[in-house]
Length: 432
Image (cartoon, rainbow, N blue to C red; front, side, top):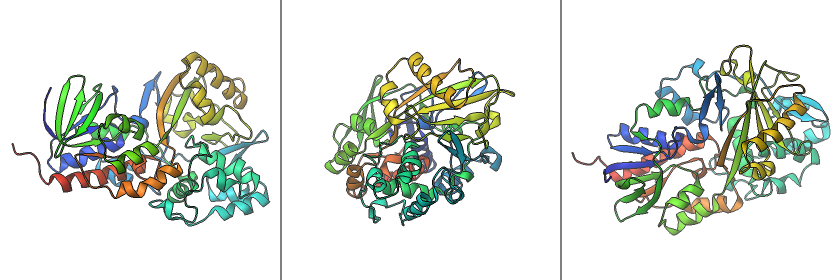
């Protein structure tokens, strides 16, 4: 197959589909190649047993997601398509559930920390620009290095649990990115979710685009004025290729990246994610009715957290039923990522019952993302300015890892930038 196109987009996650949509609207011939059999990537949702299960991303904020909300408006999403969750995030400490984690109110009222620790935590409110976190006073300081400057409770019940939300190793990831993200998105008490699953915007965009599913790209080679894609069905040539996949995959695919790109690709490592969704015969609750329970490493050696999906959005499950998703911490994720589903379910079911005694945990569904979230390491942050300054060539990139925003807003912003760079290079569609 040698179908020439203006732009070939590799990856049908929110970055790839957003970039493809922008370039298609500009009149270019765009085709999206997706290795899996469904769109949305790390925002994918699956439907099983009458439930909608988010395999990756869980929520979004009314703050810090400006590009995302603009995109949703253009796609025709209404307010009730992205309803507020309306329930808090809680943290577990000494056998007690404390609401208010991730919110200023929770910080002021305790959320599991002593008065002395809360006072010390206020020192974390340093100015950090989410767009340029490396320019903050924190520089390339890791989360662990920052934690060592503060009260132990700040480390154990604030910084480490917040980092575990990204499945980060606190010794490897930059504090400026974490604090910049928290400052941008604001109070977790205001978060929202998509009524029909986190994949809703991707599904809506894919309906309007030329998307080829189950079609992996094996290699991308940049020529002087175009690029070649090698697929199982043959070679495709394009005036522009956009690699809208996690950095480790982009590094494997791109055969001849320029030096400044290769350096950043190598530095942009990712964490892995593993989830097990347990259908319940009835909807259970935790004290205070949180939808998410954060389980700090100081108290729990298996889980990073529990999501009560039927609390997050009751319409996600059949009436009178429940759904709980267990997320192991990054250490246990590494151990279990390649294990059989039965072993994953057994270990996580035991952890779930510690917090929800007596629940039946049969029929669980396991989801894996080997490349789930950018780690935001000091090496990646140091290489980012040179990557930003790269010239536009026939192969370019989009994804949350190309910005210091390791969440879907970063992917949408990166897609808009990649589309703009492609248009500045191509200028106009191919002549018919």
